[in-house]
Amino acid sequence: MRFQLLAGAAAIALGAASGASAQSVESGWYVAADAGYHIPKDIKATSSAGYDWTVSSDNDWAAFGRLGYRFNPNWRLEGEYGYRGSDIKSVRGTDSAAAQPVGLCKAGIVRTASDPTCQSPDGSIKAQTLMANVIYDFMPGSTLRPFIGAGVGTAWVRNKAYGQLSGVPAGAATFQNTRFDDTDQALAYQGLLGVAWEMSPNWSLDLTGRYLATKHLQWGSVTQNAGPVGGGVTDIGSFKGKYEDASVTLGLRYTFGAPPAPPA
Image (cartoon, rainbow, N blue to C red; front, side):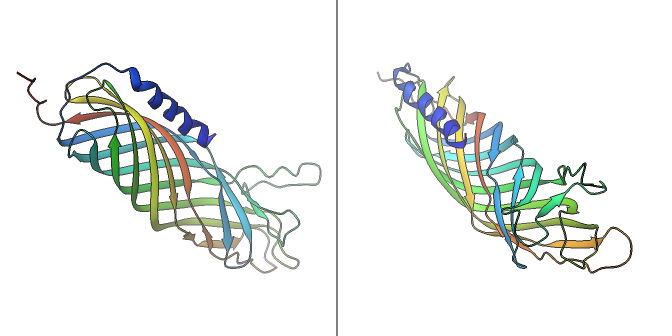
């Protein structure tokens, strides 16, 4: 699905070859704002205590703000702030036969053999990014202009989750609740693909696909006994994993300045 969204943006870009001519501003500063939809990839996380868990979160909205400079009809350089938020769907072990516990369930729910439903833990994954993007615009002078780009920067990813341990080791407290509320920062990089519609000399409408990935992030956890006194508390440690995400947005861009004078 992530690659289909980016491929769709590419198809639109390739279909832009028949765009009509337009006199746009060829250089200068610009500002832009984008909003759209993002699809986070499952986070495969390994803990310092030896547990392998997968954190799945919902597809949700994303937003970006950009400040850039067009050097000539083809090349642009921009700084970009991005926000991607999503609610957690599940936190599960990669192997149900692995050492207990094997994930998080919703806290406060009594499970029985006849009703073992885990339900989703509470929480969210929120990513904020600051990126420097280099963008190449094709087909100068066309109304529709495909573009490609690449960016590098930094990401802050907050893992906020709360739930009951799904299964506990022998001799441990039966009901234990674990909380993640930690933000870590890591190097991030992304690829961009899209098409711009030059609506007027200064205004453009950008359809952009982004694929973002980070280096390893680490989030700490705290576990407490949530039931009767007795039994030990299970320390699941801190978890390390990478954040990856695909998004498609529609944005409005304004370039300052005046278009070149028409030839005499």
